[in-house]
Amino acid sequence: MKTELIEELLHLWEPIYPFLADFLLKLFGRERGDFLEFGPFCGGVTKRLLGRKGFKVALLAQREIWPILKDYLEGTGKFLGFHWEEKGLPFWDSSFDLIFCRGAFFFLDE
Image (tube, rainbow, N blue to C red; front, side, top):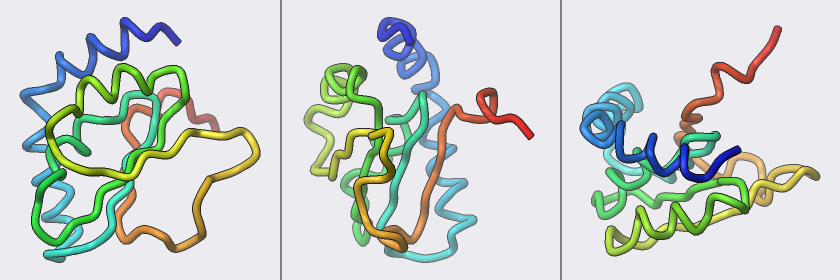
């Protein structure tokens, strides 16, 4: 995965992320919760939810894109960060109330 592409996509989708975050919260229907975003193009919704009252935000991403995500999210608020590991997820089951996967649709098969 080319990191330059990830950075370009984050900025390209920047105008859409506020609407996407609001849409997810409307579907969620609650005023508080623990949120996790992951996927090959994650970060934009995390950025929009950081600092929202009542939400704890986490991000799960591949180790190689962390420098881009740190720059992109700098100054927007505190979040939990996890690296994607091949051996499984680095947190307990049922750790989050709302999980959003950004950009994985194209990588899924039957």
